[in-house]
Image 1: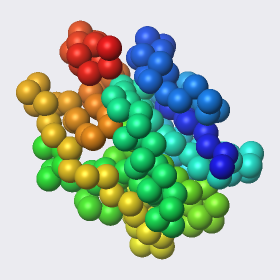
Image 2: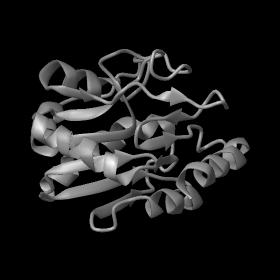
Image 3: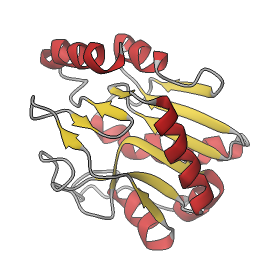
Length: 194
């Protein structure tokens, strides 16, 4: 099984922290050309299509401020996703899962996702961004939901800071582009990943 991990990254320090939590046997790609939130659509679409063209079977997308806390559980969930036959996996981007998010149940937030590239590349190849959507990446996930089979991560906890999302095998700290959150992000990493 060929797997690549991709990360949309604009902070070398956060990326280095996240990279230490990756599986060292997998190919990784740091994407630095997608620096703004509006670039999320093109990052996801391009990396799914490019990775498929390069011969990979699966893509793991992970934000630079999302840190793997339990590698064994991560692998269990990834293998379950692979054997399930689903097209894509992630956490639904809803207020029920993430209190500060107001998206819809068809959309997985792109802080941590799994994609079956053969299935996903075919489904999204003609998808275009929607400037009027809640998030610019919504058309990708809505198209995958409507034409594929989603695998939803279990409901996470929100940590005491009221921001950080803690799942079974990850913590996502949010707001990596806002320098006022640096100390909080580093503290969360040290608490859960040291």
